[in-house]
Length: 462
Image 1 (cartoon, rainbow, N blue to C red):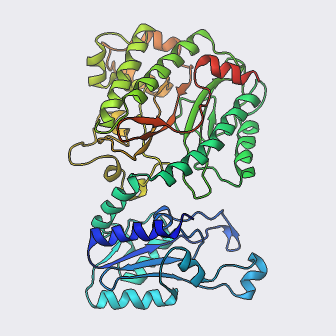
Image 2 (cartoon, one colour):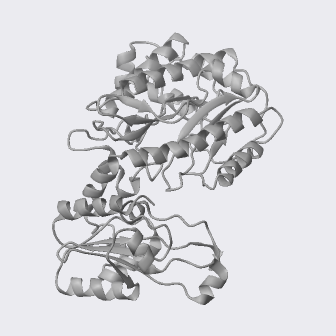
Image 3 (cartoon, rainbow, N blue to C red):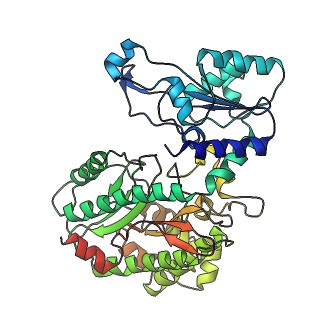
């Protein structure tokens, strides 16, 4: 945990912004894999972590703004529990660590909230993503489960997004701790990868490396010679000379802040001519995008500039043609770049998206596009100091998408389908780094991970 003053101040800001009512935060419970005593590794809810800092199951927190009370609800472990789990902090000790003055048995939460409902008091809660917590709210507040998220407090949601979007120095330090692990993950993957072994042999070692650091992966590792599948979680392919690999991975810091890094490298340790050419187009787009990051610029505009860099490069290589600005405006480049340039990063790898992707990434000035490709941009609004975001352009040859667009004769004035057909089995390339928006500029976080062709080939030969 951070110092308790951090959590006190965060909750104070909530009270000042919301002014009245009760705020309910439900922590997460343990989740059984196949029976009650065989559980998945526990992960606390990120907003509960942000405002209370307590990283154990079976907890809830209530901020009663009108009574100026902050209460942690939970239970103390019995000797029967301790036999299996070792001695645990008492509920009162947990509450003290987070700066709350009161702690109560979990059963008293039901009474507190039902009294508030009877008095017609406003009860704020965030949208829920777990079925068990939806059912808890149904029981506690008398709201039908199907309507729980419809009735979540928009006022609270917007205030939480506003607070969590701006990362403090302590939070940035945590992200960089996760990036230290990412550095080792990528170095190990490049060192191990070679023709004749399966993807799982490398991805398993990389995940094990994370576990050996006392950490966990921030999301399921993407490690595949089929990088054209954007979120490919299969690790079943035999790697062969001539293949290129996409490794999209991240770790969590001790306080659960995420890293998110993508590198693309050749199985044989050397890029072929066309692989090098396309890789350098993506790298140029990423470098241009990072250079543009500063307060006040819309991330949507950075996305579009990066798209123009890639479209120009693809034109020089014979895959696109015509006027580049017109091609990007029409969305023709999305055949090769069908996703957004990046997203917010923090306690969640796609930070706060459970609260509403449009609420996190867009605002009244910047609306989400409906155009294919651009519609998948998760972050479009103006950047502010303290934002941490990913910059991850890519170029992909997706056979099914190519076939569909070619059959429709789509964007024939901008795409050279004859040349694209010759490279339909190319795969995909993506390059991603994590960037902090500073007061006047930006800072790429973490130690430099091999990124140029020369650096990657050098790391792969170790």
